[in-house]
Amino acid sequence: DTVYLNGEYMPLADAKIPVLDRGFLFGDGVYEVIPAYAGRLFRFEDHIVRLNNSLREIRLDLHKTVAEWQAIFQPLLDSGKDEYIYLQITRGCAPKRDHGFPEHVVPTVFAMCSEIKPFPGRVTGVKAVTLDDTRWQKCHVKATALLAHLLLRQEALDQDCAEAILVRNGYVTEGAASNLFAVIDDELITPPNSNEILPGITRDVILELAAANGIACKEDVIAVEALKNASEIWVTSSTREIVPVIELDGQLVGPGKPGPVFQKTDQLLQAYKQ
Ligand code: PDD
Image (cartoon, rainbow, N blue to C red; front, side):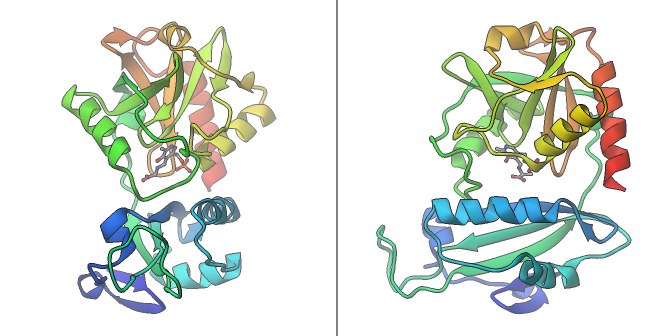
């Protein structure tokens, strides 16, 4: 378990950051989760574009090219496995705790690689629960300050559900750590990108695959009542791929098993990953 910290590679146990790091004190940082199949980083440029957008949104000045990031991650990857890179960048370590941004501080850059273990619910389907979206108004930023997400996910887990599906002003946004798709009237629908959701890379790939393979799909708002009548619901992310939701708020979704649009799209995604 070699990890990367601020320009050096070391065993995970040796990777340490000072307690005054703003990531620790304030959650003042951003992150990325980038899958790598058989040692190849998946949709790598898209992840770096999203990273750069997150950095710009939190006013953190750090510029590396796609090739520079690639060079940092490559030594961490094992070509024999399906893995993901976790990358975290914080504003760095200031001389004292102060809310205002410190001057002349060097960002902390940390990366590690972990194995992607197939998520069992991907095959069987999972239960989900709708919860009030209590997060801030910059959900398009992949910020490390995840307390609202954690409370929502844990509330779902406490209710024996795998994911929380979040509701803002009567419309569903996304999951606590996933994007949302629904099949309504034979059409695949996902909420449009906005400040209310993270622009998921898996989401983009699914939209592209659907469009290229004759699956009717659109980006549109989904009212929570419409979701309750959907024939299929899925949540998607880099680490879990497409996970069918077979029960929402204690009611079966469609016949209560993963649906045909899921089966087809999942096959397309598996083939695309190779
Ligand atoms: N989370 N929305 C939220 C709030 C997320 O945290 C994630 C992913 C997604 C899906 O994005 P992508 O398809 O690019 O993985 C949507 C990662 C996996 C995490 O926090 O571990």
